[in-house]
Length: 327
Image (cartoon, rainbow, N blue to C red; front, side):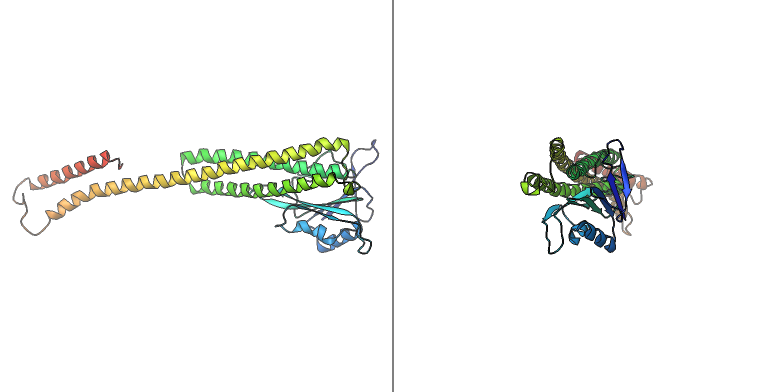
């Protein structure tokens, strides 16, 4: 699916106009969600960019990176920059994951490619607001800032979920809660790797923005410098938070695993103690059940004596086990 949007250049007419590839104009934003091969080829031909730049984000295993293509008259390519970042997906229950988002910036267009609708790009699910399609560098920084902010939002949500699961586990040790913790821990691992690679890509972008070679393609205006600093701060904060919460969640998993193991040991000790106590009457009664002469065999209260002996030995064994803190 392809959508084309262009911000009105007339300040008296705020908002954006929807276009198509047939009537597209310079300064437009081309958004591609799960595009087909034909759509990729059409946009690559229209924007004069390499096809592999547009298809890079369609690989779910693609890591964050930045690539640059200079103007090449032989191949017909215009100067363009590719930035691939990993963005958080809309969580389904406890299933937190990431997916790649490709951003191609040319001197004429701003192009985004993703496998599915996401909470980063402008749209029905929220995303970047107050953007201008022909201010390409600022739009790029807004996408990066929104990505870091969404990570922070989801990390805090995961922390609240883990607190609720911890409270439930304190009341009752159930496999369901442990599986939820495992899902959260896996999500934290995905977020940690994604934020680390995104941070490296942002550092490379900062170096490119300071390079005069790329000034025509990605130029930082004075009003964008504060936003650039905010992007760096947000990514640092998100990465630090995800590492801390990931360590806390991992420690919680280890703690509850130890608690479960300890509870199992307590149950096994209790059952072993009960087995020993119950086996004493069985042994005593088996002695008096032999087909040989036994004490109290002819005594009228012999059964009571045998029961008393069995009860006494069991009581002594129970007292000894209790002193040993077996139950």
